[in-house]
Length: 130
Image 1 (cartoon, rainbow, N blue to C red):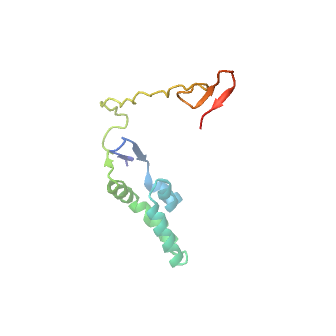
Image 2 (cartoon, one colour; image 1 turned 135 degrees about the vertical axis):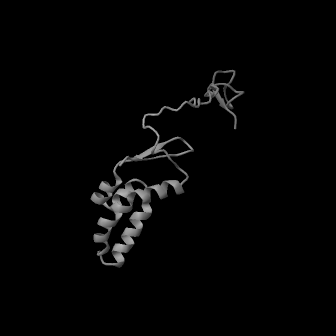
Image 3 (cartoon, rainbow, N blue to C red; image 1 turned 90 degrees about the horizontal axis):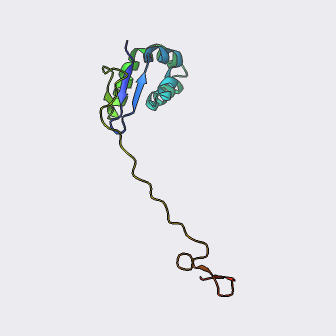
């Protein structure tokens, strides 16, 4: 099966999920937590506590079956778009946004009375204005 790919419309970030059935079988709810689907880990933990661990056996065989649907629902509910059918190496034709020019702070002299309140008196001794 092809990997799942979802794109964040806000920043263009694409997350790719390769063979979720295998990884969810090997790592169970920890795999979902690693991919950002914390609800699955919480539900599985609560079920394991309530059933004294018996539900872990069910989780090993049920999570891989529904892993694709769980990921699809999670990312689509967050507003991401499914780009599984688009080629992986596709380059965007949209020009990259340029950063605004950086302004440099004006350099203040240590002995300038106009900018800092610290100055040099007529006799060469530093003066401080508060």
